[in-house]
Length: 186
Ligand SMILES: [Zn+2]
Image (cartoon, rainbow, N blue to C red; front, side, top):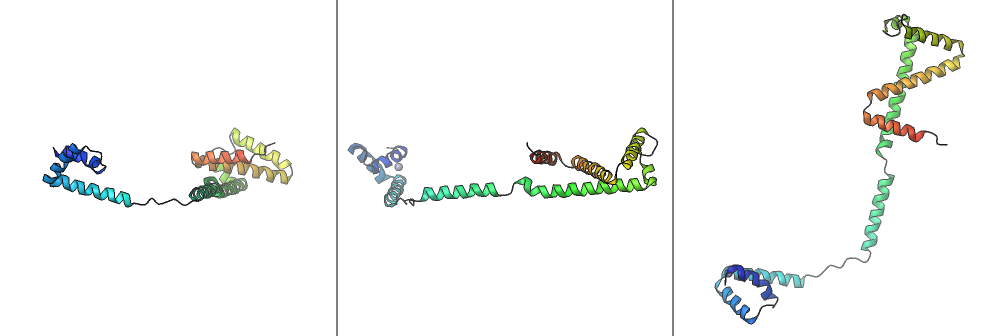
């Protein structure tokens, strides 16, 4: 008998599933082969360990505990602030800052004709600035409350545009989504 065959039969031998003839052949080999004898010893140790191994019974409320933990984890995920709400105040700050800066810039330009004349598009000689001054003239004729309101709207729109131009595309998408969510649905 070869070692390979003997090794293959060791498990059957321990399980008492060999014929008497097979047992005699195997035992004859084991008596003369230390390697296979050693393997048999290891096998026997494993079998003995398995027999003495006590199955640990799971607690009766294991399922309940697992489901509770899953529920807690899920609710924590739901109540935890989303990426957008974490990021939202900073956008608001950016928008307010941009709007205020734009309004301040417009105010400065309106007050100082020397700065206005330096601008390439509003130096007083092109159609755009003529339309601009016509618009300003029309605005001057309405009451000051409407003028301030118009400046606020223009400044805010400019601020939003500047912010969206310089913000990343991801921020633009988030901003657009936020605006759509805040639109009053009737
Ligand atoms: Zn052998």
